[in-house]
Structures are given as C-alpha cells and as structure tokens.
Length: 84
Image (cartoon, rainbow, N blue to C red; front, top):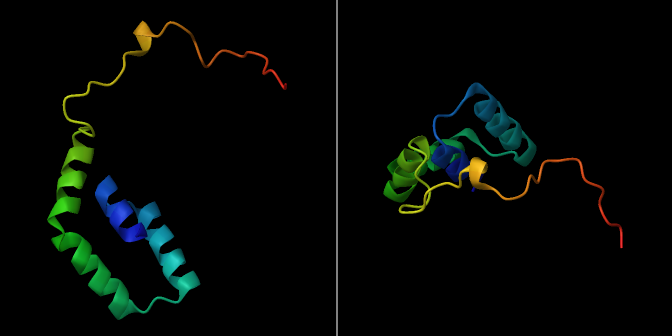
C-alpha cells in the first residue's frame, strides 16, 4: 500500500511522515496496526532492493536514461493544441 510505496522511494521525509499521519487519521488506523505494517515493510527484502535501486537511480537495469540533447523535437515548447 501507501507505506510500501513511500518506503520504496527512500528515506521518509518529514512531509511523507506527515502524509502517513494524515492518512492514518482519516482511515482511523490504530497505532499497533501501523507499527506492524512498518515492521513488515522494513523486513521485506524486495522493497529493500527497490529502495536501494531508487537511491542509486537504477530503475531498469541495462536501460540508460534518454539524453534530452538527442531529442528531435522540443515537447516543452508552447505549441497550440488541435482541439479536433
């Protein structure tokens, strides 16, 4: 769930912790259930690998990120959109 996704992204920042707290309050998740989920996430080896790779920017082994200098077209330019 949400805890797994945030954990896989790397360290929990104060903003992520605040977000988790707000979700817990909204969903009325008790402290003991939250603690069990945090323990599960910390002991999940697959999430640990994802987290390590995320910290190294290794998302797809063997695939290099595209180089913006090689792009043929500038997609960020202000161009009119065709409505039809």
